[in-house]
Length: 549
Image (cartoon, rainbow, N blue to C red; front, side, top):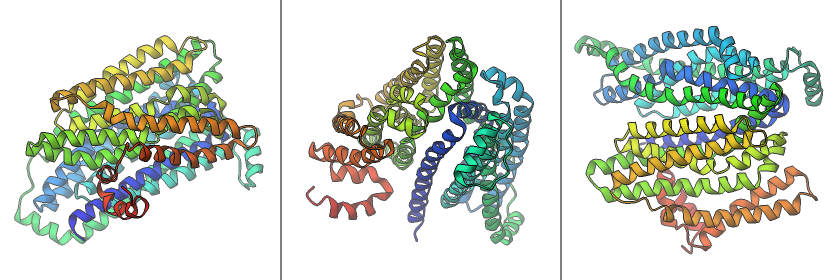
């Protein structure tokens, strides 16, 4: 197998692993929401932004620096230097991650109160070890990716997700309040020892799944890296004797890491502030503390997770197209740059527009599938984020590939500050509250996308053709939405909600794809261009399924 084929196969494995993880994250929310309810989900969800902020602050840019340095010295054949980089990064990750974990443990009581619900304390405690583990895991994965070995990261991701699901569900069941836990155990026929400690402990048990999943991934990656190093031990000793180790390697790694860390930590810190503003806004609106937490759980734990589902697919598209974008710019081929920018944005719109329309039309059935009617309204208002969010991140990746690294982060930060202001104004208004928070998210992504598009137009020296990008998918999505609305209306009184939703999932792609083809909004050539590394296999299927194009 050639090096390029191996890299493409590894990239495909990463994309598939990302899709499986996203599906797993979404599916685990179904039983988890039914176990702990939107209130328990809200307690669990509140702890995540603080955990993410500390993780990014501790080791944010180090994995990227490791990947860059490993790629550089791998090309030079200096595996001894690569191993030295890994040793330095793991040492740094252990020290910085340990300090951040201690900070999270010590500050958990204050942080939980600042977030608006003191019951978030135990989930924060359960997540503290994950700061260390996920930092080390990220370093190990980027070390392998720097050598263009993507498959180990994909395997580790699937292992981590499987462990996380098992521990999350098991711990949540064991630690539920007595009445709920006994009911669940009887329903599942489970012969388990229940520890009825309370809803916040069940949420902490769910958070523990992240920690144990990270541990499983770290152990696998350590085994994988150790196996590689053992095979090259003799070669490493010879190189160390022949060529000295470069000086200042650790300082160079930190110089590469800190700009990325400062940029990546801004959004998680703003998210922590956003949780506090939203939760306190709901309390000011007159909701009791438990109801406010349940409302936040329905919004962040269900609605947000649904609309972010297509992100993993557009992220895979960005990973496939961004290197070609950089190469075209390096050649000075601006026409190819423009074509690749439009192709990336059009691919994102084709994937995400039907999800956005579907989320709005099917908000009530989806919410009832989770067993939480509270999620229906925020999901309906949040639907456009399924398009605007991935489009925004696509433009971020494109701008970074074209050398504009500061502008997209500045635009995201400004948009997030606007969201904080809207949340502060809208969340305390009874009757608007959670729907206002959802609308603020739509405004945030629209603002960031608008600013990013202006930057792209400046670099491309021509306007972004939004009509070409959005018009065909919009028409097909509206046809699909009308069909789904009629289908749900006819099924709602005669079939179960699950059957109605299942029928909609079958009909939706037929309506959407059929309208795209009938209106000639997509061609075989364009579809193959969007497929990237999957194009050769897709072409064989299209020759059978789409012979008339």
